Every structure is written in C-alpha cells, then in structure tokens.
Length: 82
Image (cartoon, rainbow, N blue to C red; front, top):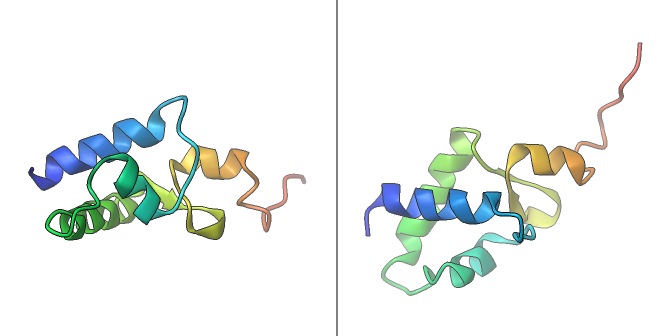
C-alpha cells in the first residue's frame, strides 16, 4: 500500500461523521494498519498530514481534523472579543 493510499484512508476515516478522536495507535488498529510491516508507513503518513495541517493532535494526543479541535475546546488558551 502506498503512502498516498494510507493518507487517503486516514483522512476519509477522520472526516467521517462516526469518527471519535483517538490516539494514533488505536486509529491504526481501526484502519487495519497496525501490523508490524505497515505501521511505520502509517506513522510517516500521519506525520506528513500533521505537517501539512490536514490533521492535528488534540487533547490527550487524539488525532482529529483542525476544525474538530476547535469545536471540542482544545483551543482553550484563545479568547474571542474586542
């Protein structure tokens, strides 16, 4: 499986309605990418997605899309006002 295919699987799963933010190891298990041979490619793909800003690590190290992080209150150090 190529790195682009892994990235697409991660993104489609994380953006789905039924996804609940979770740590990378559990995400890999849900996607059946936790085998010893493929897990390093999963980690590399996830790292690339994080560097590109497509996914972020939210509270407690859970993987989520950036707009989920703001909805769940992960940006608690920001204030809105004038």
